[in-house]
Length: 162
Image 1 (spheres, helix red, strand yellow):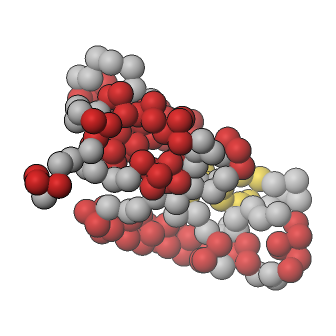
Image 2 (image 1 turned 45 degrees about the horizontal axis):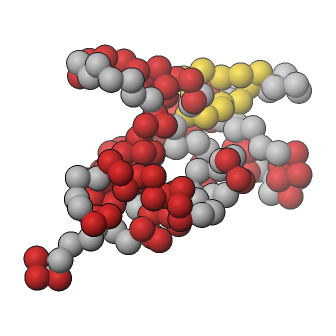
């Protein structure tokens, strides 16, 4: 994830059960790109320096978005380009999904981040690993998630339970 608080890139493990769904999303993005190219609109917006350095990158599949926007935009040169799915679209989809489940507590895409940390700690992941995954500078920030875990002793399991 880019453009985060603190300017750090975050990397999280992809659950194996989502691999096929991600592959399907990549194939759908490929299909959209091929249709765009056939119409002469198969471009993505890139920083100007990148576009100059890598001629043709704006039309090549590796530079396309995995989650493309539904519509095209016209750039300042009058060219049609496709952008990525806007975060507001994702937030709206998340809100609709929460409503369909009947969850009454406030839930946002950001609450998924909190769930991520809590579930890792409940699974016995070392707090320093969770700190690194969350991008926290200080472990005391990560320790906030320990109060929600249902395990005593800050989530530590007895070696006899192993």
